[in-house]
Amino acid sequence: MSIGLLILILILGLLLIVIEIVVIPGITFAGISGIGLIIVTILLAYINFGFTIGNLVLAGSCITSFSIFFIGYKFFNFKGIALTKKLSESIVKPSHNEINIKIGDNGVAFGDIKPQGNAIINNRSIIVKSKGEFIPDNTEIEVIEVTHTYVVVKPKVLNN
Image (tube, rainbow, N blue to C red; front, side):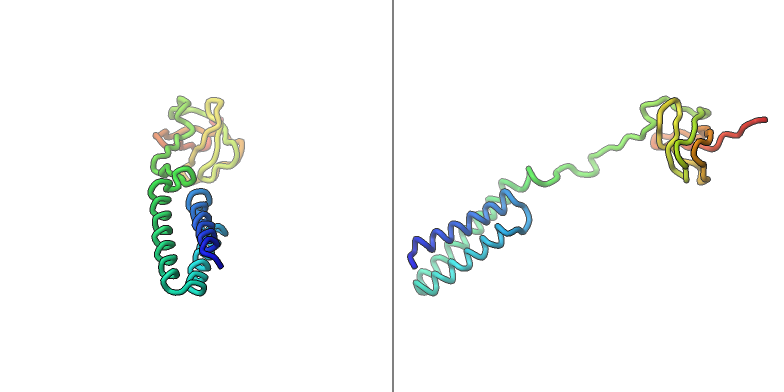
């Protein structure tokens, strides 16, 4: 076995580790194969060339591997692959903010409201809440409370 072949196997192992860090995040076949090739190269260097060359290959592969890990995580840091936006930065706007809804408006339940559901108020479908009671589908409703985050409704009482 020649030193050139050992260097080729070592470079192939390091290349697989670079692919693992930069292209394929996680623990995949490329990373495991790269580590395996580096270990095989070190063992072959000890077996075929003795302790001096084996120690040089071990030291060189350790220094190179740690350098690749440092450079990979420092500069690539998975910015193109991982989610960088925090959940606290997302804003969910209630469905009634675009519509001018006020107390006393009437509508109809669009599906069961138990205690939350959908209703059509001012010709728009919005998410509403009841005060805990079940309101069946197609029941006429009345708005009793409007806050920044929700609309509270109750079944409309029909006067005879």
